[in-house]
Image (cartoon, rainbow, N blue to C red; front, side):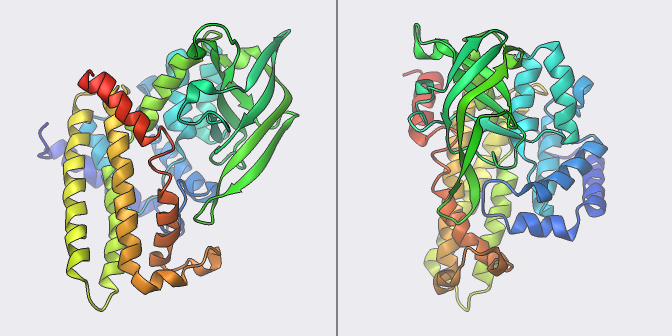
Length: 386
């Protein structure tokens, strides 16, 4: 694809920069900079989401009639790059990027009319109920039962590693509605009100000291069958579509560069930079450059709102490993200063201090969203054809 900016694209970039200068406050920048977990807290991401929605830029992948922008691939890349360079918060993706596209493709008209405006307004904050204690990378092994009873399903079981469930008022979940046939054929996609009786949460502290994930237990929870997306026992198709968006519909390289900037700040604070660290820094820069070209090539071939298909596994795997490489370089750049890190937020005001919990949490990057081994298997089967 041609990366020379046309006059129209230059004007668009100027428009984005003007918007960021006006709407991106120092508090929001500081909130994102202090985030070592996967996503910033709602008090950081929420105001930014409202600003984007007011401008009409919250859901660029959605159709125009539902609030999408109709941007080209290059415009999306310009927007994400400028936001990352400016230090803008990440928008919580569970609603806008994950369940939203599933509803647009598989949801009923009633579900679209009810849920999509609430995603845009921020009235609903979503979490993802996929993994279970005995069903992580082998997602088809999930056992959260949803037994039909009149017009409801009665849910019993447990979800785990549920990001921001303690903030969410809605969950989209995979549930088992049948044990007949292949495991994938007995799964349904369900929308759940987190205030329903019988739902209890147990917080899980990550190795980085953050409360980011949770265990969610369901005991005789009644969910209307009208909250099922798509046909009963057809949730696996919804899940595959969602996971392609989760793994590949985002734009990773600008945020990778922003993460690397933190490492550069830590290196600049040293009295000396060992040759080994300088070499590794240069290698990571080159890796991000090549990954950026892969992203741009992939995006250039997509229609607005389309997901990348099997190449999503390549993007997810490469981005995860790059995040880990940058995080490892970060703690090495800190040297002995990293030993003074504390998990108490009161001691996390200095930007370099976030590098140690970020490193600890980065160990999970090649596990969640599909483990590296799973992605390699998908690449071998769907891309290489072996």
